[in-house]
Structures are given as structure tokens and as C-alpha cells.
Image 1 (tube, rainbow, N blue to C red):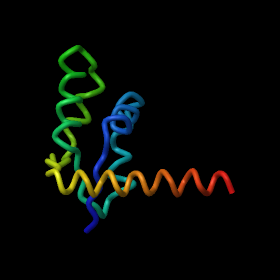
Image 2: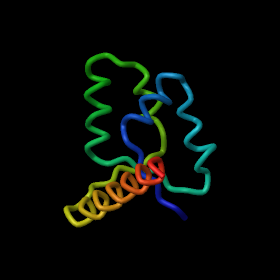
Image 3: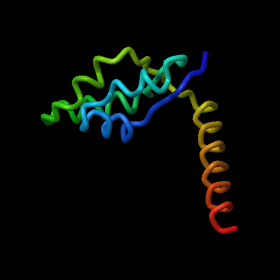
Image 4: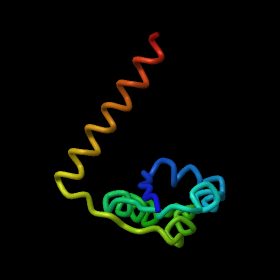
Length: 91
């Protein structure tokens, strides 16, 4: 089973349009996660009154803590993907 980690941006966008259900439709064969930092960001938005957060928090999404080694690996992959993307756009 694949594991997919979401950031607050995509969750907020889907929450704002009332389509957080798309996560399960698109990734039905995957385990869905958010990081502890994303969870806290969503809670902060809820605390200041954003109601689109509730359906996001009601999803069966795991909360993952990224240890320093995992975070470094993530940063390397992110940088590589970004560089590959921009390199292809220039060609």
C-alpha cells in the first residue's frame, strides 16, 4: 500500500470547495497522512474561525512526525523534483 503525505495547501483548497472526499476517490488504495506541523496549521486555522477545516480533520488521515533523517530525505527529493521540473521547462 502506498503512503501519501499531504500539505496544508491542498487540504485547504479541497476543504474550501467542499471536496475533501476527492482524496479518498483519487487515492483509494493508499494510506493518507499529514505531518504534525500540518495538523497544527489546520488547528490554528480552525481556532481563528475557518469552518472548512472541520471536514478535513474528520478524515481518516494519519498524523506523521518526520524525524530529522526523514526530513532531510524529503528535502533532497523535493529539491530534485523542483530542479528536474524547471530543467525540463527550459529545454
